[in-house]
Amino acid sequence: MLGYVVSEGRGAADRCLAAVAERLLAEGWRLAGAIQVNSDRADSARCDMDLHVLGPDRIVRISQNLGALSQGCRLDPAGLEQAVGLVERALDAGPELLIVNKYGKQEIDGRGFRPVIGRSLAQGVPVLTAVNQASLDGFNAFAHDMSERIALDRDAVLGWCRRVARSAA
Image (cartoon, rainbow, N blue to C red; front, top):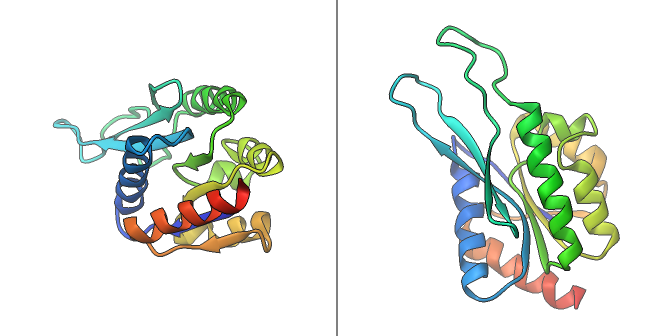
């Protein structure tokens, strides 16, 4: 019950997961998780990264401005952990599905959303996430045989969500 899409191009997986969440919410699904929305900045080639936390419906900035010449990772670990805490509390409400914007370096290292994903799976709540090519090996080491790759297509992902929700009920 761990479905994932592989991100192809900047923001493609974010847009797909956002469209899926929007559709499921419109259908009345109880969701927990976080959707990433990137906002272009006029003063920089880099965007701002925000997580839209499902459940409490909050927005948390997870990027930090390191300056125009910076080449380092812009992830704000404190912002990410704030979003993780909000999502973890949302699991108490008994969602039908957990959507996590990305299984990335933080999760590979045992931080970020990894504990929430584990808790969700232990509670029988299906998890949907995105993984980039660079993180696939780390994701597969975590997921073992629990995961199912889904085409990066809204209808394919919606079909997976409906199928696993029925089997989890």
